[in-house]
Length: 224
Picture 1 (cartoon, rainbow, N blue to C red):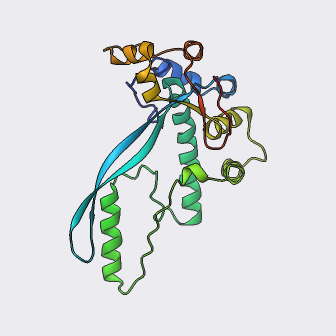
Picture 2 (cartoon, one colour):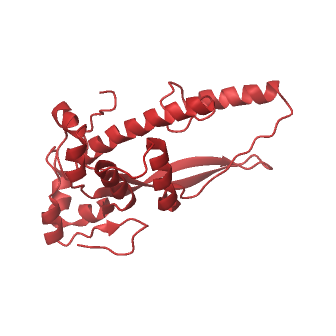
């Protein structure tokens, strides 16, 4: 099970093992699974930008929204992502573009390796044109209808099976809890400060304590 990755963070459930991972491979189990809310926080990264005219370097803080799934949910998603990656690798090979697509693939090299290879090719084949694009909020603005159509095409089906439908619904209609709101809460904040591997809270407990379950950008309402 090379797709099974151990996760030690705290969430709304406990870490899983291979016993649960074997259950994940049963489509009937997945089609009945109840997914938990994600946990959201904002990660600040320091970037250095160089002015092309003066050469002066400025420090820029870039914020990245991070949302991570519970242990059971992450295990399920890992297995289904593994299936998608296998199908994509087969399609890339059939289309003759396996050497061209590098994003989100386990190819045994880092980004700088591919960048060095591209620059070496550009120098050897000069003059060439290099196109670079910065896409803001790419995943947040995906057309879900188009995404579903592409997924069905990749899987070679007319309609998604119940388990795949369950997965698709979760990744497009998820809810999340803000980590800062949990830290600010007198009960859950105290739990987060403890050196423990216990789950943070149950869904029922969070609802009872008034923690907001935020809808993803594709939905318009929150629920408690």
